[in-house]
Length: 411
Ligand code: FAD
Ligand code: SF4
Ligand code: SF4
Ligand code: SF4
Ligand code: SF4
Image (cartoon, rainbow, N blue to C red; front, side):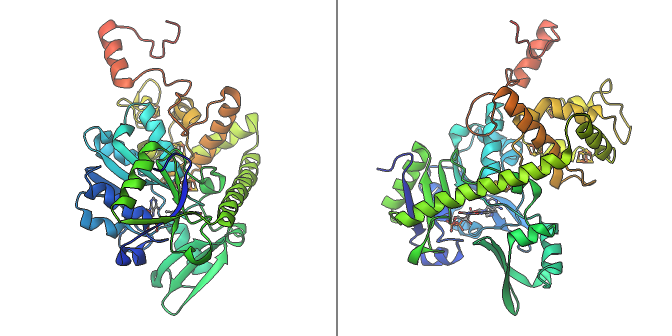
């Protein structure tokens, strides 16, 4: 019997799936087994759309279709968590197994704390994540730095610190450090991210630490919960998944790489936050940058922490209707409501049509708030400072009692 903290190398026993999988197809085999065995009603994963820059979230109920989601899409910058809340009714009536990157896993917890997702109905298979590259930036990078037509690329991977492409007529790798020095490479939030091994998932899977003859052919799986242990054991027992003990040297290397990634993230945090300045200078910069805002609401729509039925930014007494750019109050409302819980997923920046670095501002605020109040978002079910009420229940209470104090913490 496996238990939390156990670690194994794992791979699928299905030869076809093994070829399709990124590192031996263990993740896909686990998802498929969960569906076949009726542990879950559906699998929610990512598959390639029209090309490798097009990561498409997909809900699967037929086990035969799960193989189509095998493989890692490093230009897949989407966040799956809010989709579970928005389109799958927060998994309230359906059991799902899903693949999550670190930011997805963090957001799942923040949404669950707000009672918008039922984590009891979700099996989270985490994938380690060194970072993702925005599709537009990737196309530009492949054209400018690799000198290759992005449409001729049929495979990309990130291996040993390099971004590697395979295209008609060859393959080429350039170190991520070099790419990032020249303004290409991973998204800025990914550079600052410190959720590289998502241990708040049920299983954390990745290629770090797989060495020797299994390198590239197996995935390093860390068991992070009882739910994860049960799935792993059952998949092995059914013969769908094979495992072996990890190479001790590989185990050591995995720890070292993880540590090095955190150091790198600290370096980037320092650089980005210092460039923002402090105090009034920082505020001035944010006011100036956000003056480009066209109030399209994309940042709110995409943010996993923004879920309110009645958003304050749409209240005429707070933000003047029809005024573009909106008064700075529009942005202040977001800072005030969600900065403590920002998981640095980057969506509010990635989807901003005016290229306002919203995620940087919010992440910088989150880090300051964490220092002040000690609340770290996305790790577990600990409640944030202000999450003391559930919105729908609270609105009902306000309507029925005529009270107007939402966060009545003095009761
Ligand atoms: P497969 O069986 O091939 O399954 C892969 C799963 O990942 C599928 O369920 C698929 O839907 C899902 N997926 C693909 N793209 C995305 C995406 N963009 N977002 C969410 N889910 C996705 N491992 C490391 O050890 N170090 C790293 O630095 C690292 N960086 C990664 C970066 C990204 C963006 C991704 C997606 C994965 C990364 N991994 C990293 C994990 C690694 O690439 C493999 O996914 C893992 O080893 C499992 O291999 P597998 O063959 O079992 O997976
Ligand atoms: Fe990966 Fe972190 Fe970037 Fe999310 S924010 S894609 S977990 S590096
Ligand atoms: Fe993600 Fe931006 Fe919301 Fe933070 S504020 S959680 S970076 S969308
Ligand atoms: Fe809710 Fe505030 Fe986000 Fe609007 S900005 S959805 S009120 S948290
Ligand atoms: Fe303004 Fe950008 Fe948010 Fe749209 S996404 S409302 S332009 S900050």
